[in-house]
Each structure stands twice: as C-alpha cells, then as structure tokens.
Amino acid sequence: MRLQEKFKDVQRAGKALLATNYYNYETLRAVLEAAKSKNVPLILQLTKSSIDYMGLENAVAMGRAGLKYFGVEGWIHLDHGGSVELVERCLKAGFDSVMFDGSELPFDENIALTKQVVEMAKPFNANVEAELGYVAKLGQSTEKMNLTTPEDARKFVNATGVNALAVAIGTAHGFYKSEPKLDFERLEAIKNATDAFLVLHGGSGVPDEAIRKAVSLGICKVNIATEIKNMFTQTLKKELVQNEEIDLRKTFPPAIKAVKELIEHKLSLVN
Image 1 (cartoon, rainbow, N blue to C red):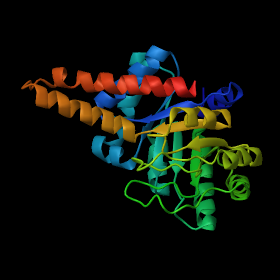
Image 2: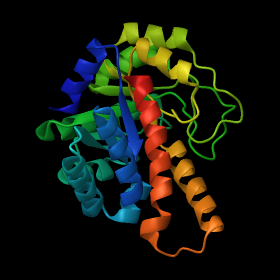
Image 3: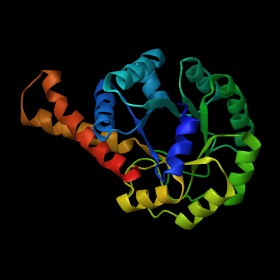
Image 4: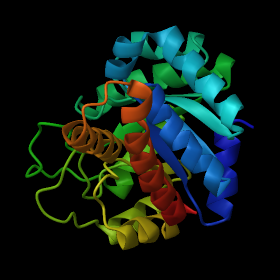
C-alpha cells in the first residue's frame, strides 16, 4: 500500500502514523521491534546526515531488510531533504516518500521548488511532504515564531499539489527548555483549510496528551528523532560505566531495549 493511501486509512480511523528516524542497525532494530510488538505500521526516516553516515543504498537496504525480517508494514521516508538533487537521489534509490524542506526560503520559492519535487515524484508514485512556517531546527532559536496560517496552507497546497504538510503550531526540533504549547485552534483551522495530510515535526518532548489531541484534530504523522538518539546514547553510557564488557553484542541490547520501550509508548499515543 502506498503511504498516501495509508494516510487516508489512519485519518478515517482518527489515528496517525509514527515516523521514527534510524541511525544504525541498533536504532533500526529498536523501532521495528516496537512496531512488531504493537502490531502497527511505522514510517522509517532518514536525514541527509544519516544517509551520509550509512551510505544511501546501504541505509535503504537496511530499512527494507528490517521491515521484512520483523514483519512490519512500513515505508522509508526522506526527512528534511534540503535540495531537489537529494530528493531525486532518494526517489531513484527506492524511497516511498520524500520531504523537500523549503520552510526557510521565501514563500514563492518554497512553492516553486516543492512543485518541482511533486512532479518529479509522480513517476515513482511517491508521497511528497513539505514544510510551511518556522519549526526551529537543532541549534536555532525557539523564540522566533512564524506559525503556519490556514490561508498560507491552503494557497501552498493548492499551488504545489503536495500530499503532506508539516505545519508550525508551536513545536521545535531537539530538546525543549520548557513545555511546548501547541496552538490547537490554529491546527483545527489549518485542517479545515486544506485536504493535505498534516504532519507534526518536533514530536520529541511533546506531552502525551498534546500528541493525542493533535492527532484527534487531524495530525496524520508524528515525527520522533531526538528522543531516540538521547535514549540510546544515555542508556549506553550508563552501561559502559557500570562494566568493562567490550562485546558490542552485550553492551548494545540494553540501549536497544530502552528505545524499543520508548517507541512502544509513542505508538500507543498515535494509535
């Protein structure tokens, strides 16, 4: 099933798909074990940094093999693609879904490049995601607020034909210094303004009830990345301090288990 069709299914059911980034075999295994245990589908995400680290073909092959091995229904998605060239490479490598992130570009330029990506993706039957508004990335200020407006969302989706739209309603990427306050009234208005599948970026650290409410108001995809990296690394650090074991097959499993439990909880929120 194409991701676009799955989005329709979860939207009708009042649910969402969890999209989890993976960075190596261990984090891939953790998120897939979680999805298998919950018997729910999952989106596997790769950023340019992860692609550069693992290699494009290798990263995709790992994801495909993992989905088959664990028996999980899933899709591979390019997260925050910063160029049309990277999107094209990922489509040719077999990605089910791609994101072109032109959110920091002028509105008209974001439209033009996103429209180009939408046309490029059609022969591949791939889902296309874009971002509109300011969702602070790692290292960027969370003080700046440029939230998505319903009017801009309608204009953007109509002009580009994009399938999914990441909207700025008060979240940020990375860690929060204080509890994020999501603008649910804005989300509801955006949902009423466009038929695009709405995406919540910066899901790490958002309170459980806020995620549940966002899904109930139309969010179809929730991204989790920072919490995965943090949970894996912090657990591994503790393990390495507590013993002198050098066998990676013994030091990694506790970190894998911790991430699995984290993702199991997140899956329960969106389902």
